[in-house]
Length: 376
View 1 (tube, rainbow, N blue to C red):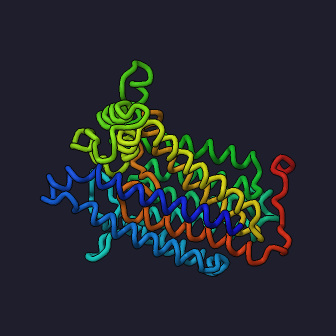
View 2: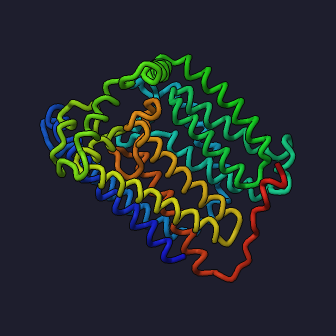
């Protein structure tokens, strides 16, 4: 397990270092244009990466069991903050997602995602004997998913809210919930999510444009079109680090949600595949940590963190490749950002601690998760 902990830690570490280089390339022209400095955004991201690495290291040594005692209170607090965000957050591009405290700005939805995974893992351990009962077991857990995801969706942050429901339902299934309960809940959420998505202009436009492009050919929007041009121009070996043309304001906000296009342009097909394999390595290592964790809470939390990071990574890459509608989700460890990078670093730190804790106490019997098929 120590080897798995090292693999996860250094995999994340290397991805963040690579992210620094790509952010520098992707943001330099924009920084020069807006801030009159090539290094303005790079410097900001550099300190966020350093802070993230410090947090990742710190949380690697905090016993993950301590989160059990504070999971419910923490989730209640972030729920209140999410509700407050709807009224006090400034409107940026049609959405209010950020809390500004003068010296500090953060996005509560990213924090809520991790706290929800922690609390669901706690409840799945505590209520394992009641999960077969919809009213007294499953519904008690799922109501938290509905509350948090709803508050995220109406910011509006539809894609993040829908993915939050998806990750939570998978965690509930792995934790022992009945397949029938999962299926019915997923169907209800899918219908509700589609209705809500069509109510907001920006999400409706993205979905309809994507459907139209799929039916009649062509690219969904200018960002996807430029992203595909960047990915295609990278060929096998890429144009070279710092040589991206799309970063010269052809691809809007190339340093954020569409940074994979810059990465593919500069590193080519081989570099893109290596990045995909890096996320798969983290996924495989995290799943092994979950499998070998010494307690049910550790198993579920390790799985939830691992699955969440991997899903968000591959959805981001799918968006840049034009395979799914534009979502606005960052690429974990690599995209320019603050709250998202901080939370993903904390998540990896927790995952590493689960691996290290199992290495320290290897002889404790693990309570296996019973068969899903038997309860479905």
